[in-house]
Length: 128
Image 1: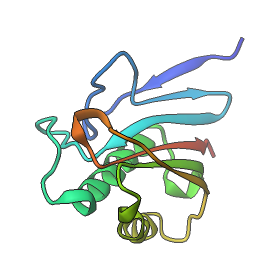
Image 2: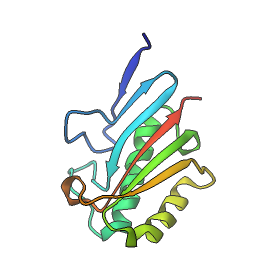
Image 3: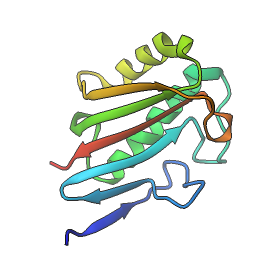
């Protein structure tokens, strides 16, 4: 049986349910969804979907870093949007954050997200 380890960092918001920020297993990092929640106070950042997307991506970067990887090692992301009208704004912010890393991706429209968030992202990465 392969060893499974949990990843946790104070540089990303603590889990708001019975889950961990990420799990490492079989050379892969499976990151839980990140919303635009501030790690300092656990509240959503203000400024709408653009601000939330930037914070969620910063949170994800912190979790990846704690696991010893970065966006360059991400092989799959899933984006969750409450309003698909926000797709272009989020896509631009996503591209800025990931740079030349272009993993496989799905974008899903959802009715609601935790804490009333407008955006959420999860990721799968490979350990180097």
